[in-house]
Image (cartoon, rainbow, N blue to C red; front, side, top):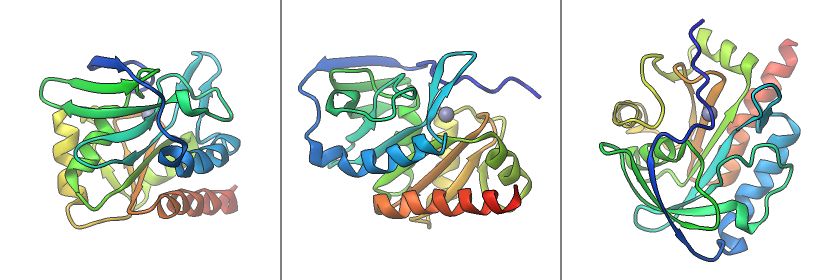
Length: 205
Ligand SMILES: [Zn+2]
């Protein structure tokens, strides 16, 4: 298998303006689901590489969104300063502009691409799970093909095609090892999409 695990590497040019951490109301729904995903190892850290994985975001007005900070995967619970506000992105140029106390997730451009793909989508949860990823690849799950790298213009285009008429669901990123994305109009729907999948997997074990 090709090494497609490029988790944690920030591939965009970041402009981070130092600003107060987001208000609790802006991330409380993310934190609730994140704590559960951490317990299920859907968010965490690869022990050998010491690289964090899994990131959650919620849309704000205009092109902004709140997202978990870079390299926070090892933490069971996040505090306000671990969340950052992405103000805008440029997929073609690979630019991310953010405000906060921590750089945004290395997968911010992927989240941006999904929000751009369908204005109804309000939450994007990205988790990792090797077995689930494998099972989804061989099933009839929506996917983004393996030759498309995350956080690129190509990924955004593929997401546009995939999500144009869908407001809640799951897709697997074949070119991003272990990577699964859930999206929805509410945090609970985005979370339940993943939990249901996880439970299905547990039955098979
Ligand atoms: Zn990932």
